[in-house]
Length: 178
Image (tube, one colour):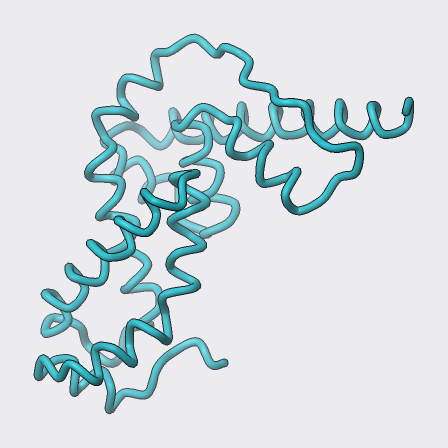
């Protein structure tokens, strides 16, 4: 699968063609859902965010210029959509003290185990880690979305990486001991 959908479909979407919009949705929905789920940690919330994100994208598609990477434009909309709604929760969580949310993980390190480790991070740490390490956004862009500073985002990312390493080490030790 290529990274971008055919430009003719985008042009038809700009004309509000429902079949083209459906093709656009089908082409990008799985990848966008994965990104949203990683950030939100809940399938229902990710599904809602996906729907709202596509509605926003179709409302703004007339502003899209074909010379820009479409997937990045769409992902920016999706992430902006959810982050604008969770800014209040984020600003509260920056000041929370960390309380361990460690959940025992199976004896082997699987993708599911890693996903659970990431989901066990505080929301602020998870957002900064995933947006920077997985989605490859800059700390400046993340800070803009979260209405904070790049330094705070860097610190939250570092804390997230430390917590992930700690839990991976604990999981590996449990696996070796048993």
